[in-house]
Length: 110
Image (cartoon, rainbow, N blue to C red; front, side, top):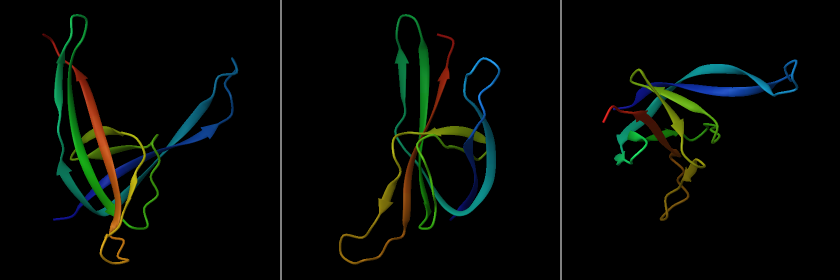
């Protein structure tokens, strides 16, 4: 069953008074998105204990996604991992959409 997600896109703005780049954030609702769980992991290193949760989004074919975008899915905000992929059938010319990998890393108390 398709869901609605929020896509957060950054637009570059003028530099601040120290010459550092600024940005503004635009948020839009995207309907008709498939959401699937992906693998996650725990890293129990000596200095940081982290827990990563990952999802895969199956976006409509006309979607524009960059590797700097973020998404809110079911109330949780995720970052895009790598470049989005154009999902195409290898048997036909059918292009159902864009595949986007997401990740959220949390620091946990170990």
